Length: 120
Image (cartoon, rainbow, N blue to C red; front, side, top):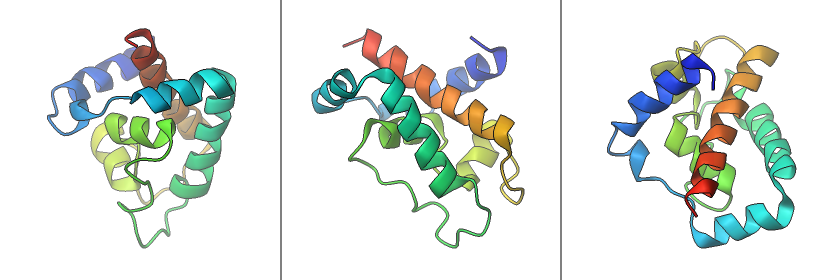
């Protein structure tokens, strides 16, 4: 695992709010049904459509708290909005995310999901 991801996940584990998120049984079943590659596609899609742009006037409200395993992972990993990305991952909220930023965010999300799946 990338040292940057390891460091941020360690810091997130100390947050009472962030560490309270876990996949539910229905999320695990959904992942098993769709496959991990499809979940990664969903993560890329959600990040590209909801998080990349800096002009989102509802920053902090664009990621639902439930409804998809990626949404749960986004809240657990501080990748749910531009403000959290800046706080936890030091990605400037006023700069449009580039491909490297998107890849990094998806890797964080997927690492968290895969780790959760090991514990189920």
